[in-house]
Amino acid sequence: MQLLRRGDSGPAVVEIRAKLREYGLLAPPGPAPSENYFDDDVEHAVQAFQQRRGLITDGIVGHATYRALREASWKLGDRMLALLISSPMSGDDVAQLQERLLELGYDPGRPGGVFDDMTENALRGFQRDYGLTPDGVCGPATLRSLRQLGRKVTGGRPGLLREQELLRRAGPRLRGKRIVVDPGHGGQDRGVQVSGVDEAGLVWDLGRRLVGRMAATGMEALLSRREDTCPTDAERAAFANAAGADLVLSLHTDANQSMHAHGLATFHFGNGSGATSTVGEALAGLIQRELLTRTAMLDCGSQARTWELLRLTRMPTVRVEIGYLTNMGDRQKLLDPAFRDIVAEGILVAVKRLYLLGQDDQPTGTFTFSDVLARELGRGQAQAI
Image (cartoon, rainbow, N blue to C red; front, top):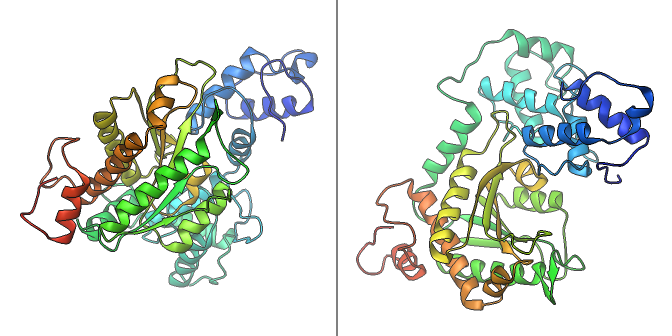
């Protein structure tokens, strides 16, 4: 769809106004001519909606924002839910179904609002256990049963507890863990391009450096793309899910109209309504702190988002935005191979810290790749991280 922003007009704006009004973010209709105009009130309402849904709060209705507006209109019971391979069903009703299944002790994966095969398997399990036809379709009979039953899982949000328990069981060693490293863009899509430097090339090189270090520790590190390809975010997520990855690390650089914008940010899944990846949030924070200490870049924070890669992956996923290519200082750092080595080392150490679960911890920025390697391979005296 076309981008809609302040100053635009037409039937699409009428639709956007209606949806924002449905969510209580816009005042009742005014004079008819104003209904097809994207004014300041609409922009502010779009920004409020974007903030609620974990989107970039730019006040512009693009594909991601329009999709979220459409998905937010569905409530559990509005329609029958089932697995559709060619065009998966998505919406708040799917997220509500996933949350309900988690409460009852079934595992549909992260409640990201997409009806996938894990959701279908969890639903079939529920239906079998409660004497319903196990067809994997959430129709009237299944819905009545879901609403009548109380919670089985207590003591916290079930999805968060499950993710934390999987991390605890994984153990502190890196050997054998499967990580997907996702260099952004690629192929014909070069991402941000400034002064002959492009994002795709830089993060490809960084990804290779990170994969090499991970492989040396005994981890199984996989790149999500080739140098000459650019999968969609949905394809990258499908690759990670099919590989059964433990973590996904997505590498990017940023851009801004202001050449003064600079710094480092990390992102994890979270929709602003309680559904989040606690392990993803923890890893994002560890990467943020480790890289800030090692690079002295500006801290742009660790934030929750509902971007497609973050919500479609079944495992904790972190997107790292390493500097702004539109800023001369950040660009010069990124062009230095030694700097990219520092970033790769910092990310690896952050992953190690995640699996240590806070045990035998040392000050941020003090652990090196050589220390990690020695610890993983069992050479020399055990070192604290």
